[in-house]
Image (cartoon, rainbow, N blue to C red; front, side, top):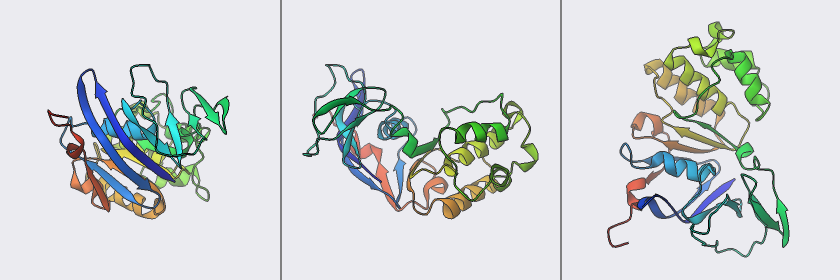
Length: 245
């Protein structure tokens, strides 16, 4: 799996969150997106994931442009590639070998999993029900049962309890279980140790070590303990436009 950002930027109204971002993400490498609170780390992560439109530039996944709905006001930048194939998300039209087509909007999303504070769990479900529901959309790693997953993340005794009755730390363990045990090549983590205690931090690092050695991992955080295993670091402040740009 390769994800390429080419002159990618995002703005809200007149404020550029980041701009002129050129970067390549490769499988088997862990990346950290760092920066102070409110600097736009989560916005960059969601842009890479295809959850929101870039305002300019493009995101390319395995040499194919990731194209969402665009208005005439968004940048018309085209990637510097002669590959005519492309796919879309959110039902946008595309061309494949010169023929107009529409691709399943979940195409790219099936390739990644994400854990983030702004993504909620279905609290009316039990942990076991939630993982079964999740697995209907994204398969879990083979060779391990849901009961074993819940035991690994410390939720064995709460398997049949509705998530609404979980503590904040237990809910975070559940989010990590859904993301890390999904059988997908890309793992995205936004403040992954939110609400975790010291034991939870240790569990997080062990899960990454044991189950994600070959994945493309992107961690958004300003907490070194959450991304100290990452070999590549991206400071989002480096992509803040100057007044003259």
